[in-house]
Amino acid sequence: MAALVVDAALVLVFAAVGRRSHGEADALAGLAHTAWPFLAGLAAGWLLVRALGGRRGWRPLAVVPAGLVVWAGTLVGGHLLRLASGQGSAGSFVVVSAVVLAVFLLGWRLLAGPLARLLGSGRASGHGPRGQD
Image 1 (cartoon, rainbow, N blue to C red):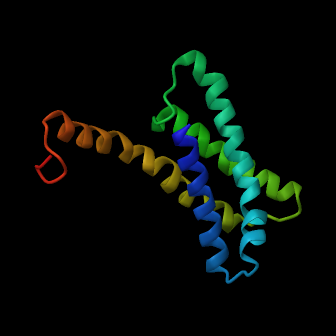
Image 2: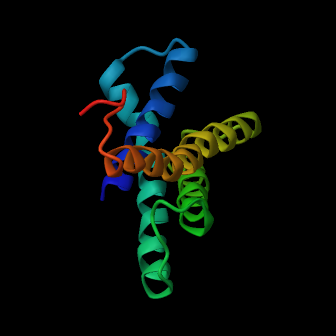
């Protein structure tokens, strides 16, 4: 569940940064308008991970295959829903969103494992972050 919350927060950051870079106003309503297709795509990706991965033992924090499925669901679902709702989806936006969403949704998963091991090893040795308890 925590991974889903992190993913949703990152999709919201993606939408907020995109709106800000284009100087779009109407903060909250505009953010919701921009983010909802990608949040719905994210939900679809997570449903696929749960449906397919549950039987196969996929870990939600793994980049492959769970992270890739979540990323693809967010990207493809988001753009299809943008088109279906009349928001449009220019080719350059597809490329930019593919890259940014990959960095966000896959990047944190790449960092989560090593970071957890690093933090876990500090606790196991009885040392806090600066060698103290």
